[in-house]
Amino acid sequence: MTGLFDRIADWVLASQRTVVFTGAGMSTESGIPDFRSPGGVWDRFDPSEFTFQNFIGSEAGRRRYWELGRAVYPVIRRAEPNPGHHALVTLWRLGRLDCVITQNIDNLHQRAGLPEDRVIELHGNATRARCLRCGRMIGRRSKGGSTRAWGCPAARRRAVASSSRAP
Image 1 (cartoon, rainbow, N blue to C red):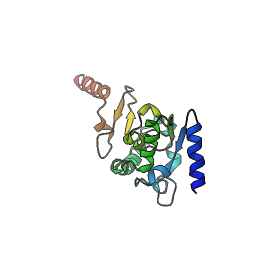
Image 2: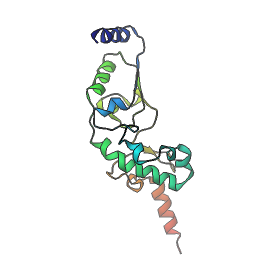
Image 3: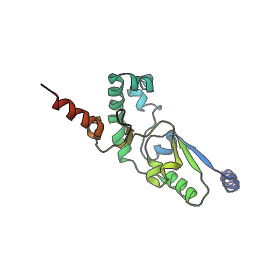
Image 4: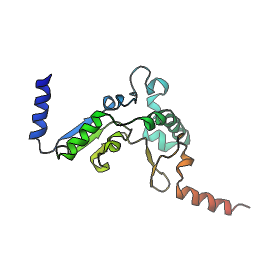
C-alpha cells in the first residue's frame, strides 16, 4: 500500500493543477450516511421525485424537497470535518491543490477551511439556498429548515404590500 501512496504523492508533487473529486465516502467518516446504501436516504424517499423540474414546477415538489431537507439537515448540521477534509485543506495551503469537485452537499470542505471558490458542488449545498423570488443566497439558520425561517426580504415586502391592500 505504501507504494500506491508514494505514487499518488509523486503525481501531486509533479502536477501543475491538482483537482480532487469527492463523493459520499469523504463524508461518511463524519457521520453523514450516503444516499444509496441500505438504510440511506433513498430508502425513505424516491430519488425520481427530486428533479430540478419538479422543484421549480410545483409547490408540491418544493414541499417534498423541504421534507427531505428536514430529514437530512440535522445530520449535516451535527457533522464535523474529518481528517480527509483537513488533508485537502493542507494540500491547498501548500499550493498543491487547485480545487475540489464534490458530490457532497454538506459544506464540510468549506468548514474545514477550503475557500468557497475552490469547491465546486455538483449537487448544491444543503446549508444554503437561493431564493426563487429575489435570487439572494440565504444561509440555513433554523433546525427544521422551514423556508419561512430563511426570511427572504422580497417575500416579506410582497406580503406586507399585499396585506396593506386588503379590503
